[in-house]
Length: 414
Length: 155
Image 1 (tube, rainbow over the protein chains, first blue to last red):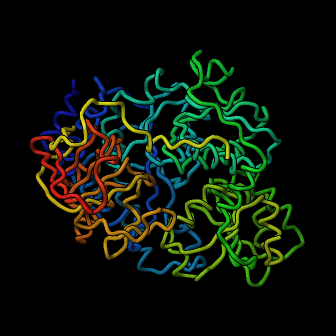
Image 2 (cartoon, one colour; image 1 turned 135 degrees about the horizontal axis):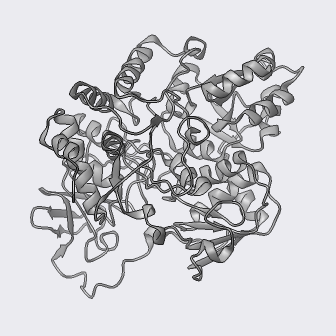
């Protein structure tokens, strides 16, 4: 593998032991994956840095040591670098009920990242804000759902990097040329159709069904051509329960102008057709709660776009969130700023809802702080992840945004 | 529900080598020589959700509650978070890590996890390990020489 002078000096240890180690690993991983060379990348988007040490999972003390080791060695990110969420809202953490011990550790991560020159969005919508790839760009993105959006929605090219190979790519500006960087690996394998009209929540159920089908690169045919970004995020996000990093929507996403183009003019390996009954089964699987008394409602996974925040605000106007319910609307700091300017934030706040940014319940110890039992959400991805995440320990209810907001107001899932 | 197929449950292409062959060759990801009881997961697993006893805490996983600690983990691959390598080193420090890992095919995250934690790891065995190794088998993985053998079958 041909290396630049800078890469060689990293490998020699001129920038410290950690930089050397991740360089070694990154070269080995590229070789194992059959990459003949490194190629320049446009940017990196890393995983969330919230669950720093909550017993299980997350960034952990090991992650902090790596970042601090890199910062000490004097390296800087060579390409734009964003990360997923924190475990707290940087402004509203007190209202969130986050303990100060958590804040201290969280700030250590942020300081180390700042030394490396992170763009501090802490958002799962990098492709809408400060890390915007264009069609065909090579990336070394890490966070699972965001990788799939970059590949699917933009037609940029990235593998699911690991945390360390992502850091190495950010420092060197290059990553191994394998997998989804090569056009030949980007064609569909499964054809997925559905025999009914789909609304926002249905798209999450469909993604969940498709993920269970065994597809690696599913091609969705026959969906509405006017799907908006929230809807595409819902579909793409719910694919995460399978190792899917790229999908195509015929007539909607850039590498699928036609059905045959999406398959590279070859025949699909498999075809599946889902019916309303299949979708209903998916809704049931995504809803584990035995009773209908909701005590927690979360909108915004992925983070709400400005449109979505407005939509929720309209539903909450002149109404009041039920006393037994906590309503979280999750978005990025930039979109919250816009919502505050617009007045939507005020309406949500007046109704008793909370508009939080920088953070996501999936990476907080929400259960520990509040003891919520039943969470309603309009994100299939979130319902799925919450069920599988032991430290969140909540049962779920999955349905449309309207249904979730109604549940927040009445306290009942109807 | 439609036509379901789980890609990772499909057998690998016929290698012509029968199960009775003692030593199964494979690709070495991380060197090492270990012998331990196997835990075989037919489905991908996340290293993020392992509890303080070294058991699988993921409620959605069919092996929820099974201990991975000090065993040789046999699985199709990892699922979930990008932080697998950080999780694995964390497990190692807290003495909850597996002794060795055998995967169908290691992706970037499992490759990184194995290289960073230095836990002996192999993949691409010439016989599908998910078919020939059973939970409870005593497995010897010689990732220095690149082979796996079943020392004692669980009854």
